[in-house]
Length: 252
Image 1 (cartoon, helix red, strand yellow):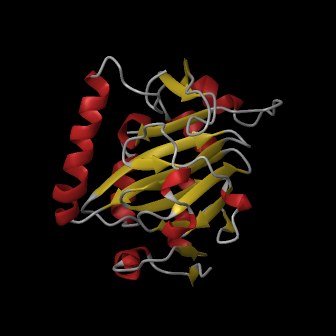
Image 2: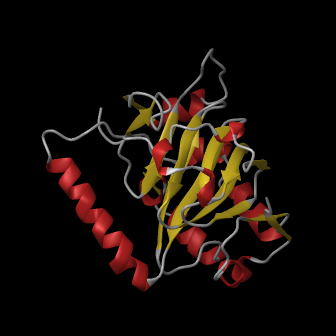
């Protein structure tokens, strides 16, 4: 399977590089990206952020029972380097401005992620934490700010509907299959400063190889807002108010 690669692509070239692209693209070795990562690495976050209670995921919520735990953000950041047996602590889909009010502005100044149609969040986790097999309904840009991840990617046809999971997840569809077992899947590693474009409906599974800080955002057109985003928001609203809602990644 073809994974495109680009070296030293400037931040302002990202949008044109991913336009109408239907295969993954890995962008590496950009000096601009390296400068940003030097400012916003995990070490600096410990001293830059204000302490607050955050809800961390303590399991592979896509493939196991969903479990959350409230902890101090500073305690969480300070413990990421500690290794435990079956270590699993993940702050997922955390708003960038809640992490630090200057972070969205810094990203916008560097133009790493196209300005229109992006919903971006922070993903911070200890080593060995895993996100289960899923695809997103929108194009995804994954910016690795610190640490490294292993990512398995497979095209939309690699998994049949019979292998979909019944578990609910907003803006995504889950599968019970392990991508490492599929002949059509490929494993890549993203390192600090790498940017990975994952087209919509491409299956992926992610594992932190080290403590990791990632900014990930959906990229969609105005047409997709009406045809995909609005129906998904309505679907999610119905899910949240349903007292008989099915197993999901957002509620215990």
